[in-house]
Image 1 (cartoon, helix red, strand yellow):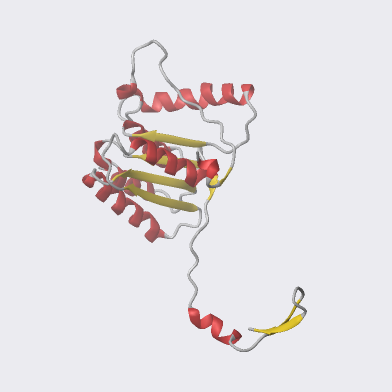
Image 2 (cartoon, rainbow, N blue to C red; image 1 turned 120 degrees about the vertical axis):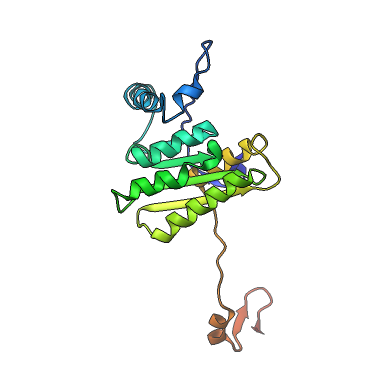
Length: 208
């Protein structure tokens, strides 16, 4: 769908599931329980397998929504070198871990090299407020290695926003999106005047 509107690079999307087994997301995506072990599994088993089986390069991104957003926040501030891009969707616990995690990280670091997307549905008002505080905190640091985008999906709550937040994240990471350029009209004053050009069709001179 994004390719209809943007010049889009080709990502290889890898989804990790449980097959017919029990869903263990409450364990694996929680940084306080199984999160570190799940990340180790991704790094030591999933990534080498994907690199052996498919045409890949060194660029890697991680996306998570809800509890997955808590997990990608954990990755951002504990293993920022592992992924070039970190996408945080509607982080669980209403995003209350965002600011504490950032404050803890910057007690020991003075830079953060990453491309970060964070988004949520507008009806999740507390999460949106925490995201707003988080993004302004990072923007204020003016970190040279950081690229950051925030997107709040209007008219949507946790479930309805899922697809749009994911699409916005992928567009941020993999699509060339044109930016609006604002120019002061005064810039054009220096070009004010009469211009004469030869009209090749009518074989006459035109004054503009």
